[in-house]
Length: 314
Length: 314
Image (cartoon, rainbow over all chains, first blue to last red; front, side):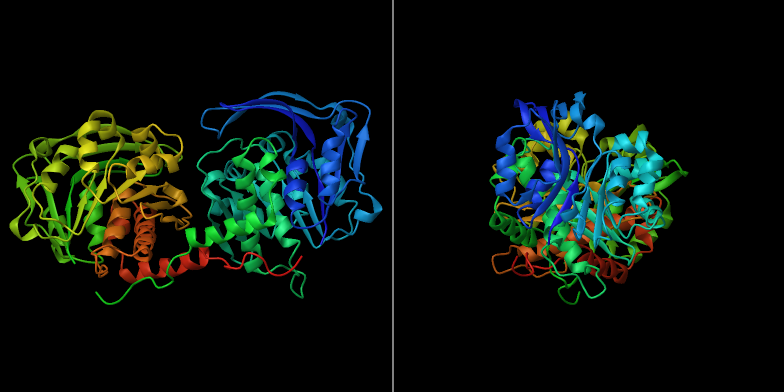
């Protein structure tokens, strides 16, 4: 079941305490598409400049990523440059060059219009709205965002939120958007806007799934000895989340079961862990579905415990 | 199966953004004993001054806490005064008055010497050693500590660590003690000292259990809408952890099964959640074992997921 994604494709300069690379394939849609393509076909809506390496396009085609919706314009590809601090949890943006992205307006090709799953990766809310206005009643719409849009495009972001089924958001971002210190109270506030599921990403602590039907699920993270580069972890999470759902037949009412949504969050944590483990997009490029299955089985043993609370009598 | 605890009993002044109270029952041993007494008898080794309210002693006796090892000396009870910041995760110590605790040397009464479970709550490592030197080969020794002793009594703390079975430690503390940014690497370093199990407490994110036998377990936290007062959360965690183990018959080799250690960590998270939910020790005083069972069952549904990673064929 194919997945439509709109988002940024970039050539990044990434600096960690251990390594620095220029011209690294980056951008939310790149991480998402690479991860999700392990599960299903991906329909990419994005823009790159004439400097974008042919090699990456060939790789994506080979992975079953449809590039009909990828605009290639004369000029430079979006460029982000960032430096991670020693703790690898915080980073400074050193430079952002929009390039051809400055004039981007997403155009969803006719053959993408019926994509049952739609992921609005982290770009300007107005562009996310443009995509929602083009697609015809997808089964599930999933939204990602970032601090920048909460600060600079709050009203437009709120418009998008009211129109999607699932929101992926970090703990800091949900507090920032709702101005609520309690995540549980914050989530209820989002539910009142019509969102059905909220996934709160906790970085190295895993993720929480909340549903308007009362669902609450705490998904364990996969323990990593070392994080090489957290860039794209959230986008890779989304790729595993939607990737997993793309393999599932929804129920008669076109909704996904809670069990499947839980599994999707676990898949998201797994693809996110592979992304962090290597530099740039490397951790995803060589990844196989069998490796994902391996970590899934490990996470079961890492997080399940005896369902009987008490062994016997005192 | 009775549990011996040595640690501080205090009268605290606690200030949160919402409330301020003086003369609140506090101290690591108080929280621990109150939580653990829900499961088994507790043998308390501690010191209080002549100002210590009789009411608390009566309450503890009624809860099955043996006070033979509680020294009552002329003078003032240990007093801690602290103020929590708005995020409730950080706090400033405003004042510490050692009172009778300044000259404290733990004396383990004869009838406590064979306690199968021993908890060394967060006090000076030299006092923890004094207790280890008195007890006769307990089945399980569990150690807690804090930043202060890592900074001021590193060598003595290391001595204690080499002699215990289980270490309870926060994520910040383990990084601080080992100087390792990676928790996985840090834990291996502790294993080389002879500790068999390390529980890394992640606050509102739950806890991780590591064993020299390769055990790795990520225990979910119980989601709280609001944290009233995190004082004593770690000590209450220890109370639930050891409390649960006190109800279990260990295996033939006198070791606990991995399943039971996992359950113990879940119980720890639960007692910790009740402690945080109300001010001071209130959340534990009215607590019943049935309420703990209720949250245990909830945590199963909150954290378990389908063990099959994939629903079918692509």
